[in-house]
Amino acid sequence: MFIENHLIFLVHGARTQTVNVCTSHNQRGRYQNVYRLSASPRIEDADIAGQPTLASLEKFLLERGAQDEGPRDVGGSTIQTPRTPPTVPAVQLGDTWLDSAIRTTELAVDALVWEFVEHPYLHRVEESLHARLFGILASQPMFAHPVPIGGSGRFTQPVHKEWPETVNRPDKSGRGNFDIAILSREQLAAASIEQFVAGRIAASIVIEMGLDYPLSHLQADHDKLVNSKVVAGFLVHFERKRERDLVAEQYLLDSSREHRTAYAHHAADGICTFKTLDGPVAQTRA
Image 1 (cartoon, rainbow, N blue to C red):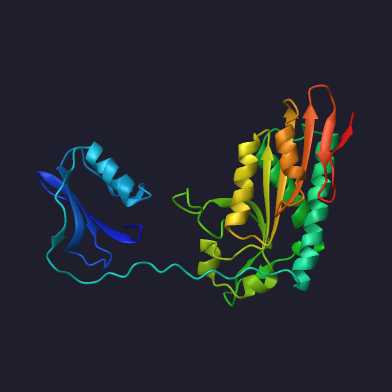
Image 2 (cartoon, rainbow, N blue to C red; image 1 turned 90 degrees about the vertical axis):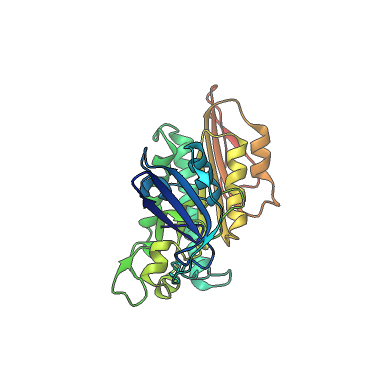
């Protein structure tokens, strides 16, 4: 198994067990760290695989009484680290497909905003709103057809839920996921099955959504779009019952914001404040 591209070997003995972390050359017998523990309780492969970083692995082992015996070099053969497939690049503004896809996405997002303005409790949780927007998008003629994945003979669709971020965020141990992403036919035609399964296609259109979350969630969604250099990003923010958040509202109304924004807030007094994607200011209605 691999952690941070370092091969890990788990060896069980009668009295002790060792966790052996290979050097960056990944040669069995050449270890940058050897951790030795009592044979009981037994460490399993799943315990090791569940650690996202070498630091968390060391913490896990030391908490279980492991002794770090340091490096060891007894020679061995090279074992290849799994290769991460390259990322299919994003489609850029000016592309005919992207221009049409952005407009189609705008209409779908605004349809969801108007629906929320009229019926704020059609959906109990955010994931249900995701599903609703996915359905609106997938029903549009330009997104409603199966698309071939390279020359694999397999097909997919342009709209995807939980598509991996293009670039890891510095404060995360791995890539997170976008709420909804849209891929072009040309991108998918250029991709292999491995790239598709690994999410190594840079989505040019991404929608991040929130329901009843504070400003910090909205900012994190914005940072996610900026970090992955999303060409056409959309922030959609819905709230119910809480007091009107003027700070979050100004954040969404900021015309210098890199990505498009829409929101709707239903207050306890029955007043709804909302902004569609093209709306320059917030509107209200009872």
